[in-house]
Structure formats: structure tokens, C-alpha cells
Image 1: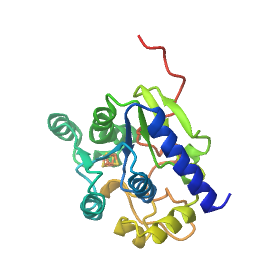
Image 2: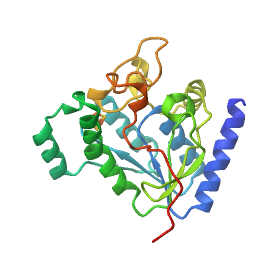
Image 3: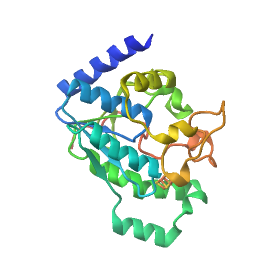
Image 4: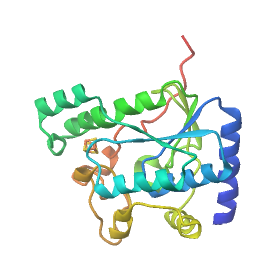
Length: 234
Ligand code: SF4
């Protein structure tokens, strides 16, 4: 399928999501895919709220992009969620500011405090969320569906860019002059927190720069935990 067809499919899917769901949010990680989705949602003027998680450890380039997004899409103010201060202070006090390098358990603990708890607050009360996940990004994302119940958070989750390639994403960004993170021009295809992200070499996997000290199979922060069928409402 060519980019024009993928674009038509994604636009139609976004319109259907906005029509069929009562309250939809886009989780904008400030990555290239989420910038495409932000631009598409704004272009279609869809009733979708957009939020980002500020873990407190993001690179300066990501904060610069947050500012650019605010200026570029004034009708879609980016709501920023930050970690709970007391929980972060307690975790850092107990484990150390950079404890995530010591074990997967500690890395996931840091992600829990800085990303997952704020994410739960960001998703609470909504019927669906949209992400920019793509299948080719990682071995952990190969079998993702376009739409799935997110049992961990109790709402539907849509992945409208699933079959887009990296080249598709960048073709869209260039053609529509979409703002993007300056680190992408410095060999950072996937950008997260500054201490957990590094540039990759030519030919390396696009996620190789994230938590590079871990095995590929463990490289998820829990934001996109695997779904299982929704439990009936209590
Ligand atoms: S990516 Fe790294 S710094 Fe960011 S929340 Fe996870 S472990 Fe902590």
C-alpha cells in the first residue's frame, strides 16, 4: 500500500474514532509518529484532546518541541502531566537518581513513577486513546492490532499508524512542514528520557538507542502493556 492510501485509511480511522467514541485523547510522546497524528487531528479539526508526559528527565530538544507544538497548533493545547512530587522524591531517595541503570526492576520502577502513574491520570475518564505505535518499530510491537481494549486502563486503544514505515512518517513530516524533535537529525530515531536514550549507528534497529543496556524483549516502559480482553464492568 502506498503512502496516499495509508493516509486515506488513517484519516478515515481517526474520523471514525472521533465519531464513535465519547472522549478521545492522543498521547503525544513528541516522537515523529505522534507529530504526524497531531497534524492530522488538527487538520481534520477532530474533537480529540492531546497530552504529553513530562517525566522531568526529557532532553532539552523535547521541551523545545513542546513549545513549538503550542505555537503551531493553538486550537490543540498540549496538556502536560508531571510525576507526583512526593512519590518521585521517595523513589529517588530510596534508589538514587540514576538507579535505572542497575536492573530492569529499578528501570521499570522509575518508569512507573515518572510515566505510568501520570499516564493513568491522563487517561482517566476517557473512552479511548490514540497512539503512534508502528509494527516495524520493535519486536515487541509486531503483532499489535489497529484497535484493542486496554484492560490496564479500562478504555479502547487505537494505533492508526500501524502499517506506516519510517519513510512514510518522514515523507509526511517533510511534505506538511510538521515540527519535529531536533534530535531526529542527530541519529535519534526514537526519543525518550535523556539518560535512557542515545544516538544509533547506521543499520541499527530504530529502538536500539532506548535502554540500550537491556535485551530487545524487555524494552517497553509499560505505557503499551499487552492487552487482554476487557473485563465486564463491575
Ligand atoms: S525512561 Fe529512564 S528516566 Fe525515563 S522514566 Fe523510564 S527509567 Fe526513568
